[in-house]
Every structure is written in structure tokens, then in C-alpha cells.
Length: 134
Ligand SMILES: [Zn+2]
Image 1 (cartoon, rainbow, N blue to C red):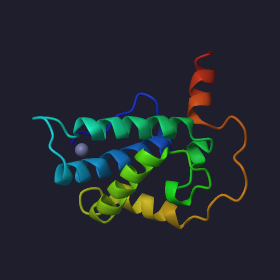
Image 2: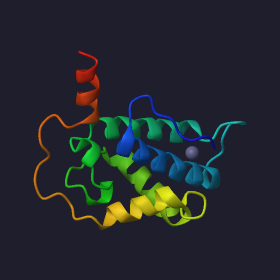
Image 3: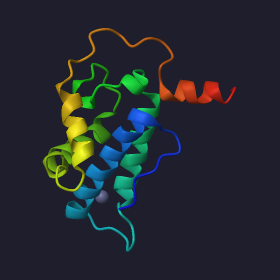
């Protein structure tokens, strides 16, 4: 798979997005039927787009903790359950195809959860639109 690309995200958030995209690819390949030439089925594409928007709007911005450590529950119940299944299946299967992203993710999961509320206006979305002068 070509490196997953996001129009919205950069730096740590982009790495997070790529990690999720690869995990979804591993999961989808095993569980769903995909159209020829696609890396994800339409359901998984939708879920990945949803994840991208959540990352963009995460109030922790580039300091985002891993989602399982985050005190803010920003996913709706249905995509949350879907994503949980993806993570559970693909987490242990990431190490061989994507060792650097997998190790990064494991390292971040060991970080303590943030104890305080995020500062205002840290989200990628906020910085992105501010830089555009919007
Ligand atoms: Zn799928």
C-alpha cells in the first residue's frame, strides 16, 4: 500500500493517521470484500475518513495521547466499536509490516494519560484554519 495520505494532518497526527490506516487495511483484507484495486472496502473508507476528522479536531492536537488513554471520548458508539475491533485484530499484526509505526504506537501507549484538560485552540483544525487566515 502506498503511504496513506491526508490532506489535513501533519507531523504526529499524520503518523497516527497512517497507523490507523494500515491497521484498517490489515483488518479489512481479512474481514471484508473489497473492490478490485482498492485497499479498503467502502465501509472501512468511511470509518477511516471519520478517524481523520476526529484526529483533525482532537483538542490535544499534536500532543494527542493514544486513543485508549484519552480522557475525552470523541467517537460515537458505533464507529468506536468498529475501531476497537480493528485495533484488537490489527494491533499485534502491525509489527512485521510496519515496525516503526507499531513501536511508536506502543511507546505512546505507555505514556501516562493527560491529567488536565487540553489548552484551548490546540487542535489541528484550529491551527490549520488560522494559518490560512480564515
Ligand atoms: Zn473493510
